[in-house]
Image 1: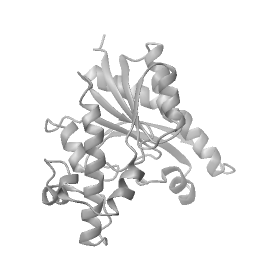
Image 2: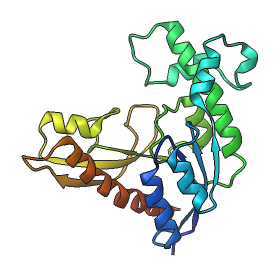
Image 3: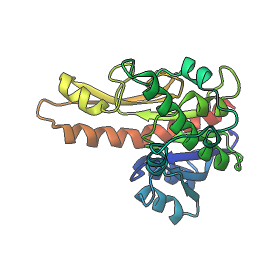
Length: 239
């Protein structure tokens, strides 16, 4: 029997993957308990799903933080341990054609938001952080404070395509437009790249000639709900 692990979750919307993980925890099909659910958006349904089963919830409103930062960022607004040069050297997600000022603004605003996330997260005994539809980029500032041991990843994400094919924000759409006959989803660990971290598990499904994009998304979500709990159990088994 694996150790029962404590899982933190981050969401941005409805939280259907979160619900699949909640259900797996509650019926003891995985050796895990969710200790918190955080969101970058207030009022989303995923928070209600967590609250319904007495999981602690919180919000760090990214949009509000970004609006505030557009009025100006002072050094005092930044985390004490923030080093722009170090973070910029590691980051791989900002468009290469972005200006130096745009990159600096992005990394600074994210660090301000991420410090708020970390301050809350660190109050919990957490073995694994699961991104269950969290739509914000995590920068090296955040990643390095969760992944503190070289080679040991503690942030898990799900992607709507069979990586390494179709990274980015529209995996199912890219799969559909390319004309693939097999689609799928991937659970992977987070590193500095865009959907480049080590793959933990994948599930595939057939795409029929008359399938629409909505059909593909429906098939994919059903596979995601199976796969994510299985990969969390795989992590628990590894400890």
